[in-house]
Image 1 (cartoon, rainbow, N blue to C red):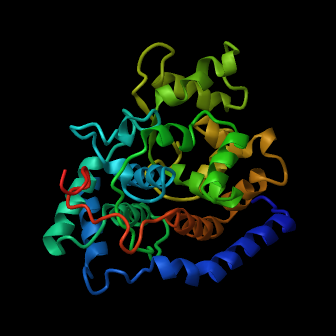
Image 2 (tube, one colour):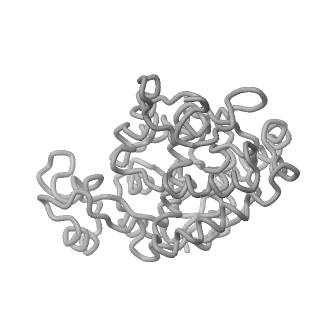
Amino acid sequence: MHSFPSLTLALITTAAILVLQLAPLSEAQLNSSFYSNSCPNVSNIVTTVIQQALQSDPRIGASLLRLHFHDCFVQGCDGSILLDNNVNGTIQSEKDAAPNTNSTRGFDVVDNIKSAVENSCPGVVSCADILALASQSSVSLAGGPSWNVLLGRRDGTSANQAGANTAIPAPFENLTNLTAKFSAVGLNITDLVALSGAHTFGRAQCRLFRNRLYNFSGSGGPDPLLNATYLASLRQICPQNGGGFSVADLDPTTPDTFDANYFSNLQSNQGLLQSDQELFSASAGAQTTLPIVNMFSGNQSAFFQSFVASMINMGNISPLIGVNGEIRSNCRRVNGS
């Protein structure tokens, strides 16, 4: 159990109060009862499809949550990440951006969810809202918190591949860059740490962290922050040459469970990605992310509470509402194309 500075605790408490104070404003745009009349079973439909997918793919929950994250950071939570390239070249898919290509997954499960929802309530539920609902279900099914998802987003009619290349936080970035990218979409330090906690489940490809094992920052050696035993185990999974698409657990202790172990791993220098370990590095400092990591490690309830608040914050990034956008009939393409 780690102590937590009272100043930082006060700041998080103040942030939580502000979230509550701003809730009526957010709910004026999005609200948890948006489909209560038009598609009352939508949450159950989403959960059922994900439960079926989990039977053959234990990674799918983390993958669906990541889709929502990567969607919201690029022109807001508008389902743009789901769009494929179109024949006339007006849509250049975000799937082909560097942070997403050969990496993001779960699009087939989103298609299955959309089909099931359309069978029940055709033309009602947006793909952007499906991503938000799928994230909540995925976290809950893995043992994490449940929350009332704010709904009412509409789908965008464009993609932004260039924006995806620059806006999405990268696994090799330092704390300064990570903070700047979160700040650019209105998210703060607590949001950064809480949302990074989603790496308590799922996998990452060797190519995203192999430099930490063999040639960190061009040093010719491993990242000195890496726990030596953990380094040895990762080198078994990821040889120096080849195997770039092999995967390692983001959380080596409970890889398919949504819990606070991610933060305990950081305290033991067992953060898989550089962007993970940055949260508990010397650069983090006593007044930024490091004390928040300590708090979440020792208090899972605090982590869950902050994670829910941060998911709601992220889900409120520039949603299309009212008459803006559309309700796509197929998440992969704009209506009429």
